[in-house]
Amino acid sequence: MRGPSTFEDLVAVINVCYEVALGDDDFSDVELDAIINGLRAQYNFTGKDELLQTYIEAAAKMSLDEATDRIKRFGREEKQFTSDMLYKVVLSDGKLDRDEDYTYWDIMDECDLPTPTSR
Image 1 (cartoon, rainbow, N blue to C red):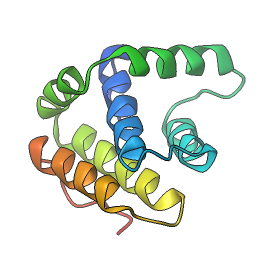
Image 2: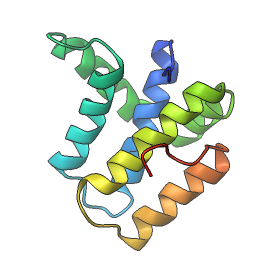
Image 3: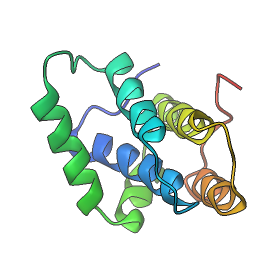
Image 4: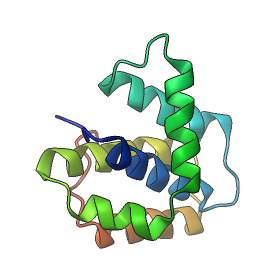
């Protein structure tokens, strides 16, 4: 499975993961670690903490509307990567708040994302 190849598209994935994690107003280090570990698993960020930080900062500045608009245009593999990332972030803290669940399903539906492979 291939993740997005452009800076802006990967920033969009990080943005929606962040938004889902914030859905319950309780963003935790575990959720941030899930985002970072998902990125490291797909991309070579080893020893590139400054670059990774640049992506995360850009994601915090991107609007959710811009992020979902970008993701809607992704190909099949990029959408699968996004779906898997979202799922890992949602499960990372071991709890699923109703608001977090709503945000997750809203993004999944709006972006027409497939079922996560790790499900």
